[in-house]
Length: 377
Image 1 (cartoon, rainbow, N blue to C red):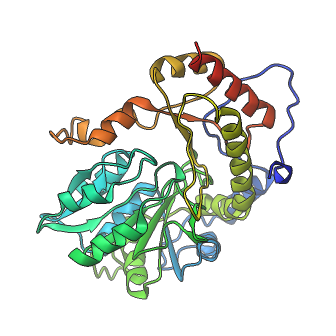
Image 2 (image 1 turned 90 degrees about the vertical axis):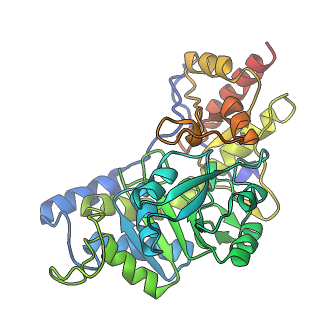
């Protein structure tokens, strides 16, 4: 497999800081941005968006193989719009893992609904289906599985639970664009899937997000939601906000989506090399399940003495990071007494290492050797 990997050449003899993630932008993106600026068409309030928005949406729905895609200005906005489209409102409850970025819960809270926090599976950090079943009440309206790190949630079991209780499912695929199960893209298994285009993701538009669906009804509703509820002119028909993706951001995104397959190939090669080099250590390395292919948005290990190892890795120029040290159910605005054993354990042991396309094979070897030395101290 390694022979298929096109590693970046290292032109320096001394290692410099290796960031956990970095946007990879080139002349094509610069040219696209300049073209938008010269045109003067920085945004569009039309139902379908501007030229670059339309081109990007066409490309991403082709990539993930859905009928429709609606771009918005952030990944959080994508989650909000999806929730609004399903008429989630005050008095409703949405089940979501606590071990996620706070935006997942904030999007739910912004509708007036209550985020109900479920535990995760220790082996892959995604929502535990059995924990979901324990959290369902008569107020539950939806489940929001999060494909954290590019790992894939237990979709078959979640589908069974949702069907039994007549619940909607919104996939928070912010970190998993390009991850597949049986060849099918995460974010495309249920009514709505949401992606993020933040600079730390596998592709970026600076800021941005996308909702994908195969429902024409939801698609048309999402177009209104992102544009003040309007269809044409000032004829607001439903509640909406200004969630539009500007043309400059869309111009970057339409170039980035074309590069995504190569970006993912590079990440997968780096992840495989890192796993090979760490496989005989005491740390737990991430493993793909049957029929799964990760985008390796983040390569996340678990280890004892995590904080000490993190500090030493950073001091040696390796931009390791922790996602996330404080579970959402423990932050001040949501602080609740809830026993989420695996969530609490993960927050104390997870550590993410760089595998993005700008990490060379030599960098990977350096990261692995450094981690091995620190674990064996």
